[in-house]
Structure formats: structure tokens, C-alpha cells
Length: 109
Image (cartoon, rainbow, N blue to C red; front, top):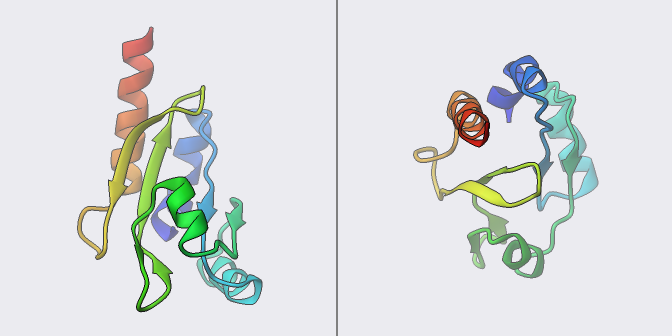
């Protein structure tokens, strides 16, 4: 999330809104927002497995966590890019998300 916050202006220039979701309770989510100085919405309290299944996220029963899941949506809300990762490798970093967004915009013109 810190990477997306650092690149927030580039997303704004593309007219892209950022949103993060978390299974953490409110107090823990607020702590993360404060630590990372996030200024985009962060939803909290997702229920596992119900909400993870609704958004198509990989979840782990043993630790009751939702693994990192990134989506890029088009203006109509259709998923045009997704990444599911149970570790730090394979996540959609901000630069890649921006590149894909710019590609999809050019292709639609």
C-alpha cells in the first residue's frame, strides 16, 4: 500500500481511484493507515471466507488471513488485470498498474 501512496499523484493524473480492503479490525486498519500515511480509502473487517470469496481473493484458514490480491478495474468495473500472491513476489506494484492502465486507455481510443 505504501507503494501506491507514493505514486498517488500519478494515479490521480490518470483519473484512477485507489481503494484497499483488509480483514483487519478497525483499530488495526487505522494503525496501518497512520503508519503508511495513506490518504485513500481502506475498508476493514472483511470476513473470511465469505468476503474473500466474494472478491475472488486467496485466503488461508489456519491464519485467518486474506493473501495480497490486486485488481485493476476498467471504468465499467470489469476486472482487466489481477494478481494473487501468498508472498511478496508477484504483486502488482504501482508502476505496473499505471503501465497497464495507460495501455488499456490507449487501446480503447
